[in-house]
Image (cartoon, rainbow, N blue to C red; front, top):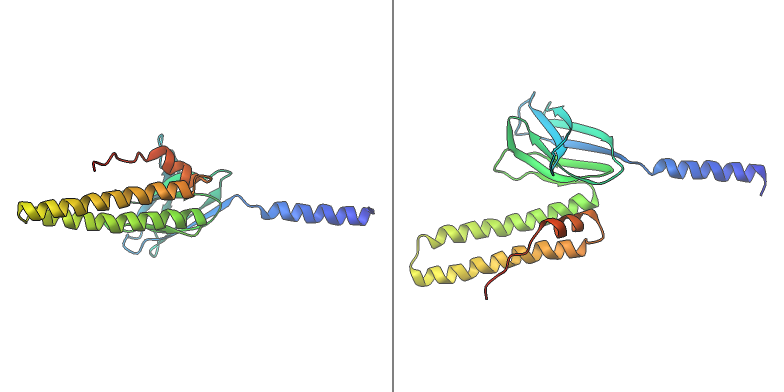
Length: 190
């Protein structure tokens, strides 16, 4: 191998390594929040270390930094911490739509966060149906309540199955490990 070929190979290797970035950028959309509001980025799990803060301006906020590992985090509005979005902080571009509580916030941008949001969407949809059935059961007779209870049980099972299947499908990545470690499937009566 000539010196020229060796130098060319070394430069190409350096460029390839430089492209492997550990940089994350979070672009936040917060149209329901006020200019000047503070959004905090913190670890979701204890000790909930604060990673940064951003000020909402024109309905947007931004975070940027580096991470060499994927972390489960939360972005939340300081003055109302229920206005929040849980997500996986990892290299890449992450988009957060931070909505006022009780409207759900959303995350997208990386494969892991897209899968996390898909799970949240499904659980939210089924949960809304569950709440509707529970409310309906308070305004009906005993025979109809029993039928509604069967539907409620079925929805609970679907939610549980959705969570455990997502965990199993993703058991080789952080999302799957997070679900497997933190979700205990309920014991359903037959």
